[in-house]
Length: 273
Image (cartoon, rainbow, N blue to C red; front, top):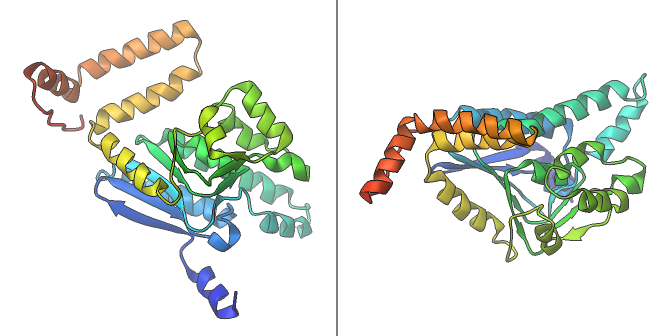
C-alpha cells in the first residue's frame, strides 16, 4: 500500500451506512485492519446504532463489512501501544472492554431486529459481534473463532455472547482450542442461521430483512425485548412474564388489526402501535 493509498484509507469513514427503504445497513470499513474494533470503531458503531434506534423509518438493521475479513476482534496494535501508559494500559483496557460490552448490548437492546451479514473471518470480539446480533447470514467462506487462548488472552467477553448462542460444550470447544470453524459448522451449532454462496450474504440478509420489515414494528419490538428477558428467568417466571406481555400485546392496535385481517382474509395495515 502506497503512502497516498494509506492516507486515503485512513480518511475514509470507518463505518458506512446505507439505507434501503425500511432496512439500514452499517458496514465496517477498516478492510486493511480486517475491521478490527479499535476504540474509534467501537464508539462510531455505538453512535450509529443509536441513530438507527431513533430513526422511525428503519425497521431492521444489517451489520456487514468491507474487505476479506468481517471483524478480527479488538485492535491488538492499539492495545499494545497503550502498554507504554503509566499504568501499563489498565485504564484504557478497562474503558475499551466496558465500551465494547455496551456496544454489544446496544444491539441486543435495539428495539429492531439486527442481522449480521458475514462474508469473511469473524474472530474474538468479531465472533462476539455476530453472536450479539439476532440473526446471522454467512457466506461459505466465512470462518468463526475465539482464539484468545492462543495469545494468552482468554476470550472472556466474547464468551458471554457465544455461550448464549450455542451449547456449553460447543462454546467451550471454541474457547479452549481457539480453532477457526467453517460456516457450515457454525450453522450446525447454531451460531448462524444460514450459509449462502460466496458474496451473496448481503443480498440474502437483505431479503430476510425485508421479510421481517413487512411485520408490525411494534410487535417486533415487544417480541425481541421479551425474548431476551425471558431467557434469564426461571421457567415459572418466564411464563408469568410472557403471559403479561401477550396480554398487553393483545390490546395493541396492530394485534387487533392483524387478527381482524386474518379472520377477514385480507392483508393487514400496520400502524406500529
